Amino acid sequence: MATRADIAEAFRSGWTVETEFDALQYRSDQFACWFCDKQNLRWVRQMRHPRLDGFVYAGRCCAEKYAAGYHGEEADRMMRNADNRFKRFADPRYWKPAASSGNLTRMYKAADGTRYRCTILQKFSYKVIAWTAPKNATPRQVVDTEWTSSLEKALRETFAELEGKVTA
Image (tube, rainbow, N blue to C red; front, side, top):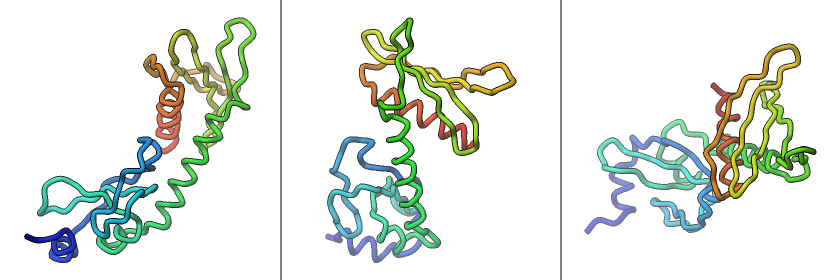
């Protein structure tokens, strides 16, 4: 029976990194590198080989080793920066209660300079809406999450949408 190391060596080239993510977003420390069996990965790469079904998880070093032209250090830096931006976005010190409704609101300036006004609607669950806040134009709603029992989930969805708007 072939081991994972044997399979990895047989398919030494042709691997591609499909996506990268922070394991903490999934509240899990259960991600392990398929190639070297390193446990508790924080920054995970999802990799695929054209001759194998499905995908595998890998750490930075193994992804660099098996995926031609992949630069994991740059990806790690970008994921750490995104994580830090989310922490600042979700920081309660920046969210101020509205006088009349008690909803929380804050301004968020994206990397491209676009300003957004974000509001957390609070009843029995949470919902976040965000709209552009231009100085001399009509505001335009860009995010409207579903109601959820988790404030963190609502914030993560909103942040992902705003970040996606920046890069799109």
